[in-house]
Image 1 (cartoon, rainbow, N blue to C red):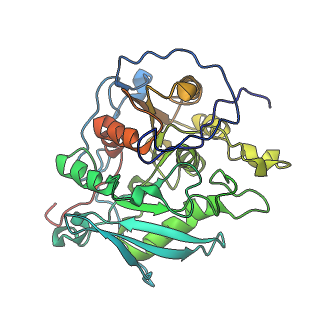
Image 2: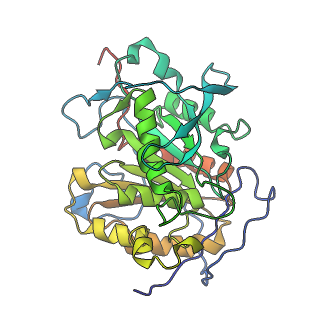
Length: 364
């Protein structure tokens, strides 16, 4: 089926927009002016779908304990082992550590690096019997051989710690795998026939690794993705493709269509990894809690090349049935990680946290 394809900007700089030159878009589409006066826009839901959701101009602070819709404590999954061998790459000011390991994916067959940070609450005896929510965080560009969200100059983990102290965010375990198997091609976070199975790596092997090594929740209420640019596409696609495993995504300056040249000759498989197709199929399901996914989009006002195409995707494919969305417009924001952290601070992290399960202290 032929449909209009929006601009895909495959690069999101971890630092300032001037630090590198973005790759040229491979698909062009005329952009129209976008009103930039509002910093936060949440697209309206039908009245019947508003229960438990943010109002159109309000971000609801997350609850530290039980998910608002729960009537019983969630089931904690304790590490199954065997424990991975980690190397500490950074120790933050609060004593928490960013560590790295090489993971061989049993299901994908791919071997790559995964960086992990656990918040200080994870080591607090009060939470020793509680699971923790997981945020699988993906970079832009090729995301290989490193994942820039682990970089100290960005301070993403320090911000997550601060947001959790402020009550804006649940204290996530931040998991940062490589996005692609090399820096020669984009694999769209997907299992492209004849190529490394990066979809299985991201959505099966990486979560299995986390469950092997850390206390997590059995329910999808404790699992979310986050990514920027090409990583934003993978985050968006992964949640729409496997809503039974993941509940929410933050997609910042995201691509919205799979267009790797490696899809040539595999149109049916490509469409099975297309967020447009996936959102359309999910929207047909009953709008009940078990089916709902929460997609938080972010875009900077300087991202004029993809602003309108992202708005079109949100308008056409979200807030239908169980597919819920929120748009954070970042005043002065560009296509880079620092801008996206500003948007998370201004509302995005709180919006998704209200739908995710936080750890529960022993006294609860």
